[in-house]
Amino acid sequence: MEINKIKDHIAEKFSNDYRIWNDVLNHTQPENYTCKNWQVEVSREDILVDASSATFSVNEGFFACHLLLQSNDQDDIVTYSKSFSAKGTFQLDSINRIEIADIDIDIEVDIF
Image (cartoon, one colour):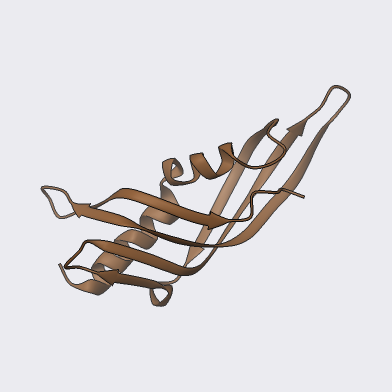
């Protein structure tokens, strides 16, 4: 598979696969919230791929979501929006789709 297609698949995974962001959201501060919706922006130009070692890095992406913070007396909706970088490994499945095998996302975990 050519490098640009791999980059496109990785960008699509970042934009559409909630499992990638689940760990990030589980480690934000404070922790008592519900994620209402989320959005990721990753450009192909910001993704570096080494096909021979099946590794990738994202130099600059952007993650945003609306969180419903729950407290004893009220619920507040806040926007969590941060830039991020990431690195990881990938593999091709039997029909040439990219699967993210391992990922490390560097993002500020404080919501406020």
